[in-house]
Image 1 (cartoon, rainbow, N blue to C red):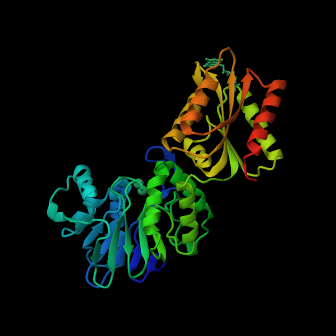
Image 2 (cartoon, rainbow, N blue to C red):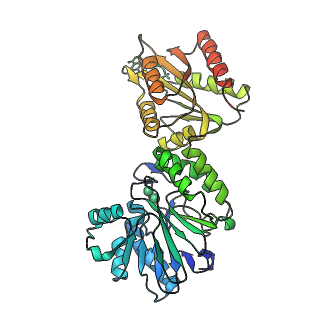
Length: 398
Ligand SMILES: Cc1cc2nc3c(=O)[nH]c(=O)nc-3n(C[C@H](O)[C@H](O)[C@H](O)COP(=O)(O)O)c2cc1C
Ligand SMILES: [Fe+2]
Ligand SMILES: [Fe+2]
């Protein structure tokens, strides 16, 4: 258990899930995911911060008893009600019959709905700025609505400066032995932070920014999120990535997402990539939308400055996976892209220019050019590709 001690009397007791193929039924997690839960042991009482998915409740109990022996958990702090963190509340109540659930009013209503726990005596309701004393340790609660649900809050351990941040600063990827960033190679987790943020929290940039402003003056020695590593050494990096993503600020690079049934739209997309590379763009991510999972396409589109979307005409509309991709970006209110498009059709007239223009207008993304292919690329395609590439290079950072 030594490896799981975050600081004196604070332990990681979370679990790994390497069996779920799709998180939230949507997002591939080939490296698994962790559901993080923490114990804070005060001189007078003990709190558990968040629980885990229902399937892992018994394992959470084992982890708790490994830390506490026969010690009893008095408080269950529910920072976030999504069932990946609340699913084992009932298991915790069976194990600790006197347990009080510490949460805000909105979370209490959800606990009634999800788990039929309605006895008000069971709850210790907290509001923004409230504290709870565990003796020599004090928990302070900050409401952070919509990071990622409306009831979301964060809990701060005042004496040790530890922030239990809920889903914020989380990543996909189960924990492979070590828990704290200092004890592992963190790169794969930071890669997954982009995908986690853009897929799960992506729509709520404004709410994340509000949370940032509330936490601005708070000194932090460790961030204990509900997924992925505990950040100690890399706090600044975790904060920076989340701050930038929630401001929709992107990195140099271009994401190209195309659909193609017979390879012709694909060839135009490859030509755009070559032109951009010749112009000095070093990071170019190309996705065939029929092959790449939506999750990775959304992540790259969030992360990089440039975006090119290519689609054949399909029954007088967009190719279905491209339509889905554009809808996903709309849901997440993606902003500030250097945006270009490729359209392909075989018989006239194609509705794609109108459809893509309408999407770009709605998203407030100026369309810098659209390569219009008829059946297969030809000499005129080359000129159009050059024009689009030049327009994009004029705006892209290198
Ligand atoms: C099921 C299906 C529906 C299509 N619908 C249209 C259409 O409504 N209008 C059109 O101009 N082309 C249509 N096409 C032709 C495609 O747009 C054609 O595949 C494209 O011009 C060539 O690009 P690709 O090689 O990247 O698939 C259709 C093709 C298929 C297979
Ligand atoms: Fe969540
Ligand atoms: Fe979560």
